[in-house]
Length: 87
View (spheres, rainbow, N blue to C red):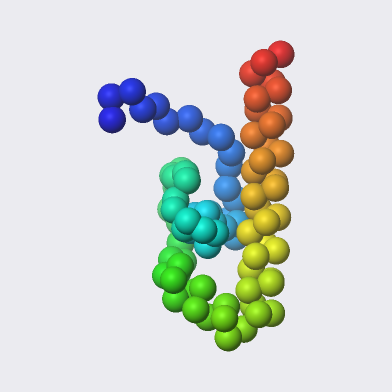
């Protein structure tokens, strides 16, 4: 799109999840990721994972906690960037 611009908001390190918005309703990607070098990525079918959660609540709790930790960490990083930009 003409008026779109890419802005780096945070760095995702090895072992960290991305695309986590697909696990929460309305299950839509809200951002993208770009690798700066060779990478190995594990892709999950979000709907299949949600169905798996129905049979294994402990797995759901574990993964959702990890996703929440990642989201909070990224939110904090974004706040720091915004504060620096406005100072």
